[in-house]
Image (tube, rainbow, N blue to C red):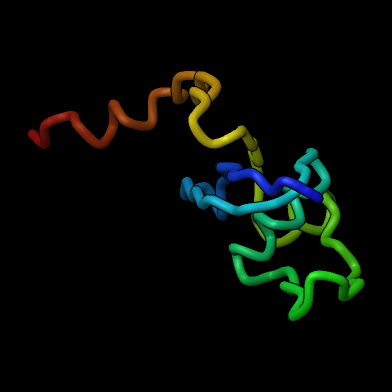
Length: 96
C-alpha cells in the first residue's frame, strides 16, 4: 500500500515568495513545478486521483511568472537562499 508523505513546495510568483504543503506518494522536480502552477491558479487539479491531466511544464510555468521552485520533505530544513541584490537597502534608507 502506498505511503503518502507531506512535502513543502516553495516558489516565487512574479517575484513574491509563496509556499504550501501537499501530501503525495512521490515528489520530483517536474511534480513540484506542476503543483506550484496549480497553487498559483495556472494548472488544473485533477478531481479524482486516477484522472489523467496534462501537467504544466517548467517552461510553461515560467511564462506565467513562476520561478525558483524548490521542494523538500516536511520536517526537513529549507535550503539556504542567496542574499538579495541590495533591493532591501533602498527600502530602509532614510528620505532626506
